[in-house]
Length: 271
Ligand SMILES: NC(=O)c1ccc[n+]([C@@H]2O[C@H](COP(=O)([O-])OP(=O)(O)OC[C@H]3O[C@@H](n4cnc5c(N)ncnc54)[C@H](OP(=O)(O)O)[C@@H]3O)[C@@H](O)[C@H]2O)c1
View 1 (tube, rainbow, N blue to C red):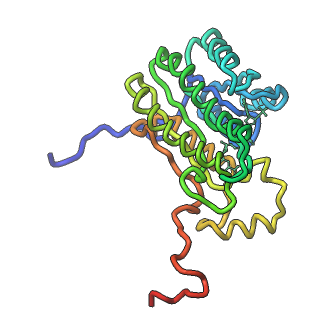
View 2 (cartoon, helix red, strand yellow):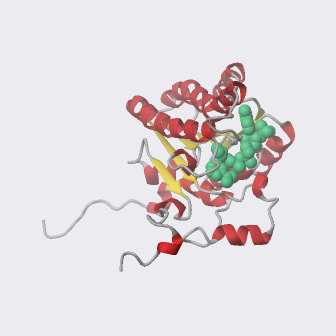
View 3 (spheres, rainbow, N blue to C red):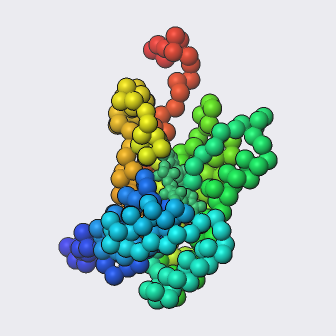
């Protein structure tokens, strides 16, 4: 062959989600709210889900979508959610699940109750979303699921909580297991793994605090919720159609670094 005549797709068009229906679990603020906007800007109708009616309905109004007040950790609520989506839209093309918040506690001091709470807070809604949402996506001709993990699931920092880290690691592996099982149904499953993100619950810090923390990141900035929503949009679109079972790190380069193998006052040892 003298010349490559392989068809060239319209790459910009592959990002579009026109006519598609997406459920966003945890849409009321932070990464969830930004994701709802990103998906809606790409043309999707977004079903915004949260436990508190006010923020959930507000974001639904912002994006021209629909609000459903539900606890994503409750099986009954999740059955109702997907039934309502099936009845109202007759299809589902994607699920974005951003829910989780880390609580403190280490190997020596974490209580049974906190351990179980964190398990459900990180894993239960993702399991329910995949189990109950997949049949509707299959019946819609396929779909995507995008979860949100944390680089704490891959790396260990002093002071990081035991349960949050290990259940995020489990979420990463849930991504791979579900991708293999659901791939033949036309469903891709991927996860975004952020470093520190300036979400509403972190926005109480001072400018000096952010400035100091930013110095630990090769990009010298702390990520915004929109930085994660943009990766979620990519993973929701046909631009990523050859990707499944992946945990995509979006952490400003934080975790490509490693502590020096020797203490700071012993630097110069290799020269
Ligand atoms: N922020 C960071 O620095 C950072 C770093 C690494 C990873 N992450 C990960 O990023 C994700 C999002 O973090 P974020 O800070 O944007 O979240 P967030 O501000 O805590 O927002 C969570 C949203 O989820 C909703 N929600 C919580 N539990 C729910 C439930 N059971 N059912 C339905 N909705 C529920 C909340 O609304 P309601 O209260 O109304 O339900 C809220 O709108 C999490 O998975 C987190 O682990 C964050």
